[in-house]
Length: 413
Ligand code: ATP
Ligand code: MG
Image 1 (cartoon, rainbow, N blue to C red):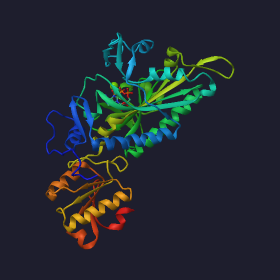
Image 2: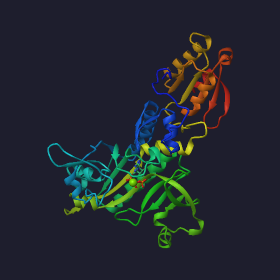
Image 3: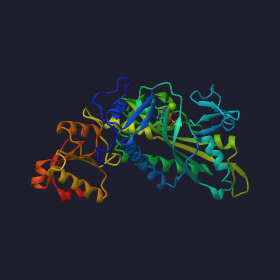
Image 4: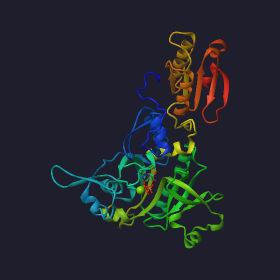
């Protein structure tokens, strides 16, 4: 993509009404637009980044047998009344509205209820199980706090996967597979080291649920980390009794601020029993399906990666997530040799299937470099007089700031 065609502009100043580092930088770089507190739109560079995050998660969910669907955001009040999660006294963050034909609807805060009902229409025998189903979909929650930028939206994208099993052994295997897939996902985001499986409250049929907590000063949660075992305990459940159960030693735990990237839950038969999701077992008896649910905050991940990797110059993206792999910065003027060299390099890289952003604008070099730093694309290729004369290009690695002269052919490998 040519930067002269990109409609978004960078800004030097952070928006005054935004306190979170992630939102400040993402707005400055033109990745997102703030509609109102906790509500954001994704612009071309932000959408490319978001799509890369989605692709990585999708690949790992497919690899464990997840089947992708998309459910509607509009929810049926009667369904949620059956699990007692409609009443504002029980769940206080619904966006609800009236239907013109009479009655109420609400925008989905999560999707256990509708998916359990969908599965009930398709699952009737032990032969239909196990199954794992997931989606990428926007959730709506009338959140009170809005100081964390895209990490806490009133509308946000979640990847939610749900597992359906005929026995607790089968459920445990699904849980373990999903847990392992999450670890792969965070590794691909470059977050493996600082993301801890963390014991937390909230399991319906287990003592604990597990959150994936990414250590960051911007985090809203406090966790206690056992570095050696690479696990943590959320402050919410930090009691001597819990530590004993988990086999953790309080003296070895270190307090950290962290942000919840994802979480995994044993749901047991809470939803299947309430909503009639049952199967006929091999022995002919009817049994409720055993379920699990597994979330990852997809738009939150854009914020987490910004909080964790950005530096004083701007955004810094891990290779698999970056909106483009390379950023060509031409120092030429229209029609001169430098521009022609840059144009040809751009065309050839695109032909070779490399994702390139090409800064073909006629601006001062300093301005272009500052923009390039702000956008955070992993490799910057500078095209100036030297490149024309020698055929070698100056390449700057965004993460390390390392500069190298690289022959043209090597830019394609
Ligand atoms: P939190 O404690 O941060 O409010 P939660 O316990 O409400 O999270 P879930 O309902 O389990 O989270 O949602 C699954 C995932 O969706 C979370 O792990 C998080 O990454 C993401 N998420 C939850 N709420 C938001 C939000 N308001 N904005 C962006 N992402 C969110
Ligand atoms: Mg919440």
